Length: 398
DNA sequence: TCTGGGGTCCTAGGACCC
DNA sequence: TCTGGGGTCCTAGGACCC
Image (cartoon, rainbow, N blue to C red; front, side, top):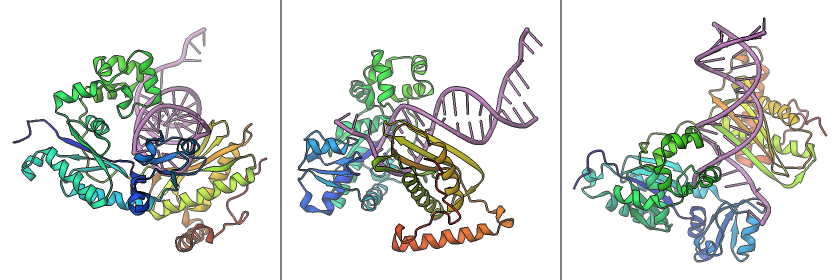
């Protein structure tokens, strides 16, 4: 048996209720119970075990609502380092079967199985079955997989295989089976695109495929053309096993426990976010040109202000300085503040030529290094940067 | 129902340059 | 009175994904 010329066999792998499943492995007393991982009562559900889903709980649902639907569930805060470790083990198993493994998120990835006939002397669905079985046995979690001729179809097929299943759709069957699914099951079609399409009677994947590319482009812009390729099975994107593109932005957000109009307090939160995100930048040996401060008001309107520097920097002093100026520009709103965020972009190697003219920057860099070391060992609050100590000025508003 | 936090990519207008 | 055009960078906002 061998692959037909030009035919691809792409496997999409997705762990079921990943965060909740990992928690149930780490705490066997939670097996069989409804488990909900969520970021707190003003947040949303990150993952719900299948026991919790029976009560109607699903991810992205407000935690408050999940509590109403399933008050007896075990609610847990996320433990990202544990999820990362399980993720690493899962992908290590996958890489044992094919060198072409693409990691798309902590619990999801693609494997190109086109070459497995030759490599393993077994058809791709057999290889996929072994792979998923090894993950289940090794990690104790459930995983699902879908095999199809394109990445898009493989991912949609996984959706049909859940929970804990594996499904292979031959090309001619994939067209028929997937065509019946609703438009929003195509990855990339969210609420907005769904509304635009359905308002015009375009309800299913098949309806999209039957349109002309031009019509879709008129409806959805550039994305319309790409969507047409996905829906018609002309998605030629390869499985990319090489290293991911370097990270393009670093951000940190925080939702306040209560909406606040106390700009002094809110600024102290923004300053902490800035310090934390700057430390991540330094840990990667990188710098940022652009700083963005985002404010979400109690009415859920967002406002962001950004500014760009001439040279990439990772000095806390520089970044806090920008953040303070930007935060001042967001003042004067009618509602309290719900959430704030700091984003660093325009990422590059930090530039130091200004050092020649300003030895104080060396001192600032040394101070950052010291603060990072202490905080890495004793925690963020082991060091407190006081206002008026040369950086991190108060907002001067309100 | 009452809406997180981490990202990526796209659009559109204005400034600026040649 | 009429007033280019293309390229690139910056900013603000928004859609989408897990």
